[in-house]
Length: 231
Length: 341
Image (cartoon, rainbow over all chains, first blue to last red; front, side, top):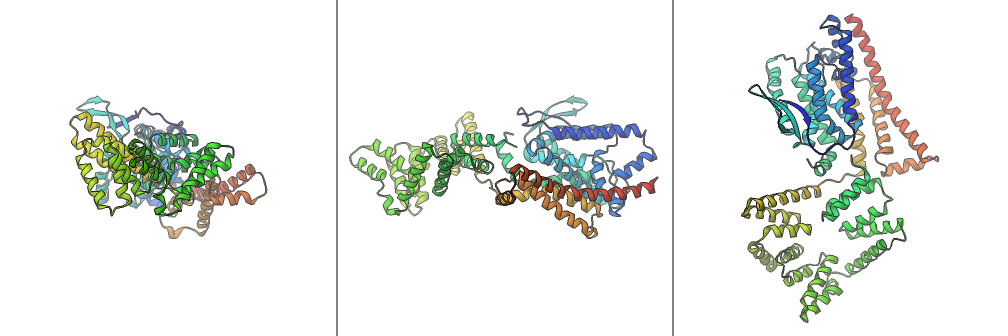
């Protein structure tokens, strides 16, 4: 299941400048990486060690620290990684930015990404593998979308017995489905030390970090918006 | 974020739909950003039930637009009512309208008595006997129940009225109509119960759907009534929390997730970020906060210049700690680069 677009008829009050801006920055950084590095080389790995989140380096206070907490969100491994993340940001980010305004959206995005970073570091304590990607922050955006627009309809791509379908599905189904997908692997990581390419704990950290921020620091916005928007 | 005139328009829409509580909340928010808008003060006076608030609001409207006759008349009416209320409960029985209604009933002029009683309860909504009389006189079953319900709310010790109310509710055949009537007078909980009953008793799916829709709409209104209103200081702190949260989290990562390893200079940096955020929020986002008034009145220069200066100070206080933190990160990154290459 892959979300493709937000199809609610009521359009946005303002242009989603920050969402688009973040997407453009991610694409530019990815393009730069592809120009500088050809394939997975030692130099590329060193680049990831410097600008990605390496739990072992964070805990030993080596490397970029606070800087990598921000830079890791703009690095992506391959075209599928960046495409999936940017599509999700496009689908869910516009309406959340419409509610918060661009600057608060950016701050919320960064805070969710850093929450994801912290949780991932705490779980994978001595891991030397760099963590990269915007998905922690995007899960935070999805948590905000879940609170604000749970019944919002999303055009989704679904493969049903190899038949491609494009139904409109309520946002709560999609977001909860994507969240539940993280729980099993996250539990396996914690209990048996299993390793996965995807940072499931980062996703969970970003999601619950976003919930925390939205419900406690922005509780009034939630109350106000929930009772005035038609979704 | 809705624009101020959007708030005002929404408040008027809510007022016209009979949702006075929502209109009041929206007007409060609008007036926080536009305290010089006489129209908003006038409408606030109309939607609030509190007599002191009514009086203050109309007074403000008249202050802002002294030649506005409608506002002057509204203020005069409120002042007259307040004089009546201060006479004490037993005097309220002798208000002109209630007394006239009694006389009309004695002379067999029931429609006139009904009209007078309706006017009386609008001016004196806390007069239980007025509602009781209205209930007895009215032939409309919904109005009977509403008036009796009000009378019982105001005087719960009236057992006879309570029993009568129970009987009327149980024998009422059109709970949907009753729900609509309760909703129109702002008795949302009663309206919700009536719509639930209507949904259970509906004979067709269209009737059930209508009752369900109305139930849902009333529930939303009840939720809005329960919506918290924040104080200006709470709003100030909440809006200023963003940069501090971000800085705190970055600091924690920089210190290897161990707060005890954070150097003292960064604690000072946190204070700078807090002060800078509060200053910027005070200047831009909470202009009606009392501290904003003190800040802006303190320096003897033009307001725009003051805003620019305080904004620059606030930005500097926020940006400097972040810059220092990132500079330390860059230094550490250079050491890592040296070890990797």
